[in-house]
Length: 114
Length: 350
Image 1 (cartoon, rainbow over the protein chains, first blue to last red):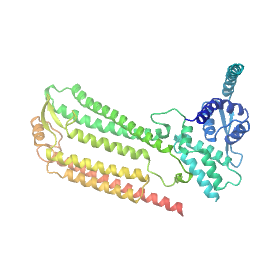
Image 2 (tube, helix red, strand yellow):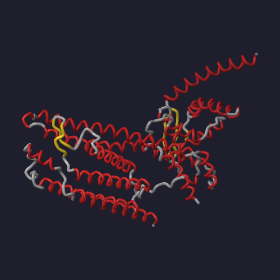
Image 3 (cartoon, rainbow over the protein chains, first blue to last red):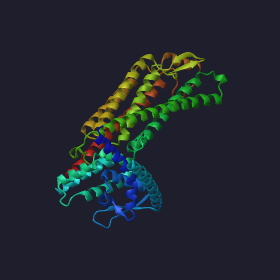
Image 4 (spheres, rainbow over the protein chains, first blue to last red):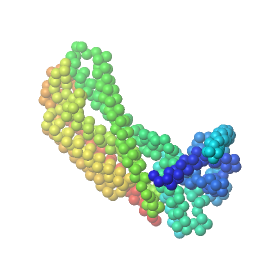
C-alpha cells in the first residue's frame, strides 16, 4: 500500500468515528435523507449517500433517532429527528470529543515545541 | 423516457431490498426510492440517473450496509427462506422417520415371546424406536440444511462483490405472475436426498434398523423377498432422482412454464409406472416371513390373513390407489399452475 492509500484509509477511519456525532448534531431539526446529506456537505462533512442512508436507519432502530413519514408532499419523505435518548448520547459524545481534543492538542503542541 | 427512468431506479431499489429481510423491504424501498429521486438533477436524464445510481454503488454492498455488519451464520437476507425450509423439512422428516421407527418397534415386539409380552415392553419398543429414529433424523436434517444454506450464502455473496452495471439490474418481478417459493423447492430437494440416503442405508443393511425380525440378536427372517428388494431400491432411487431433476428445473425458472410443466408430468408418470412395476412383482414378502408369522400364530388382521395372497393383495391395492391418485393430483396441479402463469402473463402484456 502506498503512502497515499495509507493516508486515505487513515482519514476515512478518523472521519468514521465522528460521523455519528455529526449526524446527531444536525438532526436537532427534522430532516430527510437527502436534505441531511446536503446539510452535512455544507458543513464540510464528507459522507457518501450509501453510508448515510443505512446509518440513519440503524440509528433509528437503536432508538437514537425518531422517524416520521411526511406524505403531504407529492413525494413521500421520511424525516428523522434526534430522540431524547439520542440527545443524552450526543451530550456524552460531545464531552468525550472535548476531552479527546484537549489530549490531542497537548500531544500536537508538544511536538511543535521540540 | 419518463417510464424508462422509473424502471431503472425501480430495478436498482428492488435489487437492494430483495436482499433484506422481508419485514424491512417495503419501508427501505419507499425511503431509498425517495432519496434517489431527491438526488436527481432537474432534467433527470438517463445519464443523470446512471450517475446517481453509480454513486450509490453496488446494490449488493448497499444491502450489506442496510443489513448491518455483524456476520451471521445465516444472514437475515436468507433467514426467512431458511426458516421456511426448516418448517417443511423438520416435520416431514420427524413424522416419516417416527412411523418407520414405530414399525420397526412393532416387528421387534412381534419377535418377543408372547408369554413375556407386557404393555410396558410394547410401549418401550414402539415409542422408543419411533423417538430414537425420528430424533437422529431431525438432527441430521437440521445440520445438513444449515450447511447447505451457509454454502449457498457464502458463494452467492462473493458474486455480489464483482463490478456491477446499471444495465444488468434484474427486472422487478410482476406481482401477478407468482413464482414458485424458493423454500418449497429447497425443501423438496432436501427431502429427496434424505429419502434416497435412507432407502439405501436401510435396505443396504448399513443401519442397525434392518427390515428384518430378530430374536435374541439372531436373524429370524427378512421381511421382504430378496427379488422384491432388488427391484424396490433402484426404482425408489430413480423416482426420487427424477423428482429432484424436477426441483432443479423449478429452481432454474422459478415459475411454472411449459418446460417445468412437462418435466413435472414426466416425473409423475415415471413415478406412477415405477410404483405399478414395483407392486406388480410376483413376490413381495419372503417365504420365511410368512412361515415365521404363521409359526408365532400372529393374527395380523382378519382381512390380512396370512398364508394366501390376501395380505399382499390388500397392500398392493392400497399402494396402487395412493400412487394413481397422487400422480393424477400432481399432474393436475402442474397443468393448472402453468395455465394460471400464462394467463397472468398474457393479461400483463395486454
